[in-house]
Length: 591
Image (cartoon, rainbow, N blue to C red; front, side, top):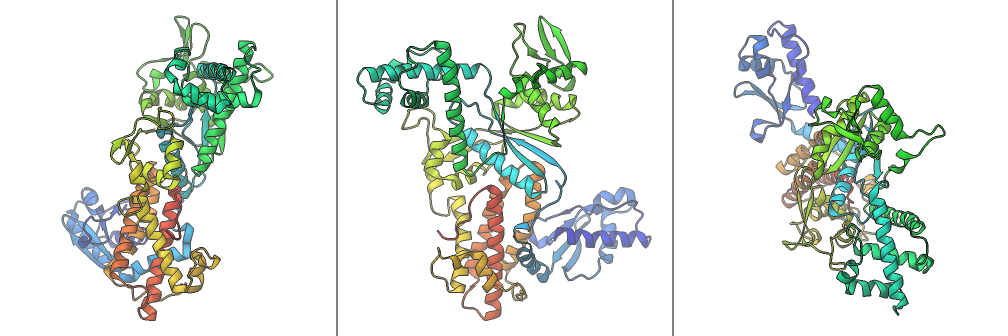
């Protein structure tokens, strides 16, 4: 309805200008907003206050003139001038009833935007080191990135989901050595009488401190490393016990790396998330036939543009030219690269792949990295790119008490463990419940509750309740039967040309107003990269539906009213389903 009201008010401004009553040049932005108080109408235009200086008139006088040119329209119930010069518009019942019809007509396309048409977006998120299990922060970024991709796609953008695999550098060598050390421990324990690798794992964990003291100080000492070492022993036996240490480390690096990466992919698949691109950091260093690599070519390009210089035997990037607090070293005096160097080549590669926008979701400890990485965009003709979203961390609770350790390993609770206990729907919804600049307190017991205090249950229950109403109207008793599909029921039992004029109850019209907000909400989520707003919208829509259902009988009314209210139920169901789909959450038909 926003576009309709904008068109009507804009036409009134044009008419007043053409009549010579207003001296205003150019097209007027009617500046529509929703009043907080419904008694002020459905829409309010604040344009008159902004135009007062140009028109040399008091805002209220401008509003009186424009209001007089707003022609009678079926969508408008009343127009009034309020306060210092607001033009308040109240929608007619028929306009609000038409919102339900629009949902049925447009279905999954209801509220879909076009702001991003023709714009290619690369959205990089999670990008964890393949050296261990994902933590809860990774889980939050998984939910955030996927939902962000969904809302951007809904707004018309062409989105690529990308995972940057940090599979190069010293941490991979340390990981390989860690697995090798654990492998030798497993082999020793088995040689000492342990029946199998499971028994060896238990024996090592039973004396965790003793076995950990044998490891180098900078090793990955987590229990998951013992699991990986045990898998290698199961597959290959003790052949690596007496092998050359360098050969063993090289072999274990590949096995451990692929084991962790496959595990990450499996966990994310269980979360309902699949990436379009898995970009290996190693590929940055791979040499072409001419001996160059993406990394060397990127640094050569920086040098040709005059942004590199040598100092103290190192090579520096003039990031301070672009707002960074100091220049950054790319090649150290010993000839090795800093971690920033491959990031430059990686982002240049994104630009070379033709993306118009690049969005990076980074952890809370990366605030100081923003100016640095955006320097790359400036150099390579993508100013302001990449756009960086900082995701804050997650605090884990159980029934209000902080959870610090995993019961199984006595170490950090992994994202997989929480996902296994809570499930993907509740995890996604609650991980998306707050703005990215706020930490999330994730309570496992709260997430599992099946009552109105659990927001995801509350929203899903509203959808399931509507599906139950539709089944009752259709005489379908088995919720799992093929004929119980809500879309199929709507096709046969909710007429497309249903008379909606009986819908005049305040809760029916409140539902229409809420549904009409959907397009604005999704557009703002895409514009501001803020999909969390959809969780609040879903809860509000579910609340409006529950109030409607409490005050308005659906089944058992006269035929005209029952049919109209079934139409309301079905329209609400579709918008709830669409909202949950954008969040990556399922819309159950029974609960």
